[in-house]
Image (cartoon, rainbow, N blue to C red):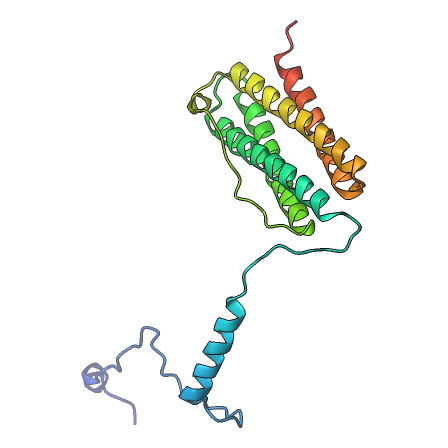
Length: 209
């Protein structure tokens, strides 16, 4: 029998759900293992604490270098590490604050340089560790006037720092070679190559016609 108009109009519509879906309770999967007891948890915490209690200390690698040689070269590399960290931070500050018509090329160039320096400090630090000593906390030295320099002053400032790094590295590289630390020698030669190329590029920017 066909529904009348009155029946259709009087029917109460079912409420429409706005996306709320009843989810079935997830099945509990048994692993076959008993839950850890407080004693188990305490044992695991003590075990973790023991592992985390380890502290770094000086080592004595038997690699053919005298202890005095390793110490002398390690101390010298600590100075190189500090100089590189200082140059890294100064280059980053110049990258942020450089202005003028050459802003974009200098901004990009300095970004490449501070990224390369960041990788370099890791190389120095790990070489000190390989020599058997703890990596020192770098002594960072940056003069306040580095915050506000002209583009030309920034370039000359960085040239001077890179040249100082090369001079120090050359001296240490020669000493390392004399002491038969060929690894440190070769590492520093590679870094000097990068610094000298960087000096060339910086000088090319400020060369007068």
